[in-house]
Length: 584
Image (cartoon, rainbow, N blue to C red; front, side, top):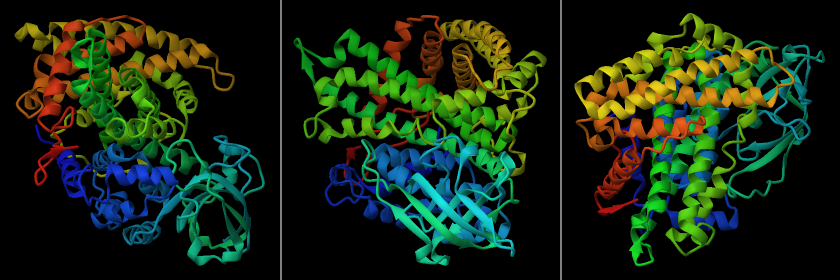
């Protein structure tokens, strides 16, 4: 089953060339060299722009090529699979522009789209040294000038591309009164303000993504015109929170790319490494760890697929979908990398020993993904704040069922994003959770026709029972809005896992017949990947499920897919370069 966003990513992979080949700009060797010197990957970013990747950061209606957020997911995943530093440094322009796509005027959006297409980096200025993720405490101030403009003063810190960026979406306190209506988003164009009115802060030296421009900027009465206000004055917090729903969803691409790379390194290693007279891949514990890592990656991929499509089809529920995705996919990838580290042993930390030492770079680089655009606790808190509407929707059976079905069905075209449908709360519950009984019933019918589906069905039925228990726990904590107890965070964690499993079942339900005939058919036949993924979810929910048959079969299919030059993923994506005949 070929899928257009995967084919788009496959073309980018081919155009970038073999990362181990000579003379390739975006090569592993170049990435490691830049990491050593903490140098920004400017030449690699220029290569991405030659290939037009930046045009997918701009919606089509504003002159770009972005038609679906699936495209962004797979393109950034492809870049991140080679180097997270590049993906974060180059992809920041997408994050910087989102406030304008969400709330800007057509004139603002068209002008910004033209700047991005011209190759100008854009940044997002939210955090401050003293306040971190507490946006309501922000002190960067815009004093009204009387003509609708502002004089901006103050410091933003730990900002990606603060120095390189030509434009900056800046969360600014434009009213001295406290509260969320005190803030506005200003699109600050550094080309249009006096150089004496701003100063770049020194680059912050970081453990991972060493080459990224993580710095800051200080303004001193910088004159910003009235036309720079994004949306209405006083709506800055709402604009940012809605924009973060899009950026948090797309952060999954960074984690998926990191997981792809780490898994590939270790899959190759275990095929070569010999211990105790046997290849490492033949040892039971190694096989167990590999199969578990592969199942987790496929689960995260299924969730990310559903989430990226629900941007268009379940927009009003993105406050839930984005929080689940931003919490679960980075933490899942951290777990994958930790398990794979056990297989590499000392080589996970060494340079120039195996795979050029890329694994230790992937590990270091990925640790930041769970922190920016809202860390783990921020996203779990967001879920807790919506417990009341989620429980009510679950009890009533409401939620966007039609939208969930459209998100799952990869053959269905996506409507354009309607940003006016974004909401800070999913008022009617979750269509993803509401779809779970129907997906289990579809699996039950498949098992009636083909008994090979029965183990997957058994897992799904156990999950269905647990979902009710999870919502009971959520109901207990639905009034926890400020001093959130640990038990509420635990309920949110369990809810996220149930959500991911429901998304996986939905993806299987709507695509398995076509996918069972495609190039990754072995992963789909008899519900193999779904069975393995559900077993992992049940275990993480405290219901240990040691489905060894599924784990063994999944590992063999992943090895086979890798051997054929394909990415071990739900849908086909060729990594083998036709000209070189080698595999990434």
